[in-house]
Image: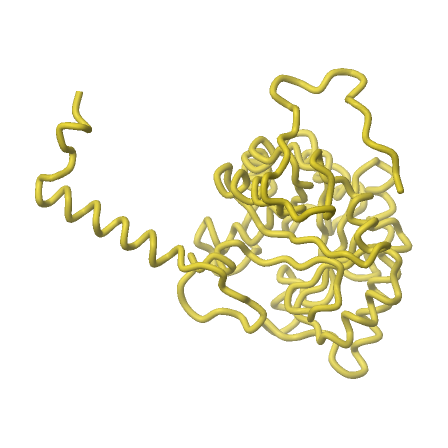
Length: 294
């Protein structure tokens, strides 16, 4: 059991006292800021934590208050905010903008940002420079990086620089062209490669391993092979944490959903109904009424 976190010894800025999450699961995480060692405690104690993407202040506030332990400023903002077909076009500058909005709004959750395509592959030095910008300008607490064992040296460089790293193995969307599209990874004999990648990245210092679109048996093998917590998206129920894109989880995005998505609300329907009702009032001349007029 770790001791309680001390107040920031050098000051913490205006309005920086974390607010307790009213609906947080009892005993899941502390009322203050979630830290990487709290995620490790979950793995050690056999408990679980939740992670959602967030790209703006309101989603971040809502999820923070709901007790979501980890917010991911994903490069999936390319698909879900900017209208791109893939994650590849989003830039580091755009990621910093989204990250800053989320980090300013979340007083409790651990905020992790994706290193976008093209911001880390050239060298460990490039990865450190990009990650420093995400922490310094984007105000996030950790970065997530796609790639296997070949990036172990990059992870080491980031950790030496004091930057917490979440590894991402299995299906890696930034490599979709090399992988032949959106395909499940780690089937059959390829399962061991996913395990080896995860072990190499955890040994290099990654504080967590996220697995995307891998068979549950492969994810279970990874979870057993690494001491650090694991997070799954389309990786079965055996991981320490789970993550979904919030627009999928809440039913905002239309169209066909991935098999691993569970939709917990119909936000698209609610929003469309509200927009239609507003338009009807405007056309009928009933809005604005006297109560809305100065």
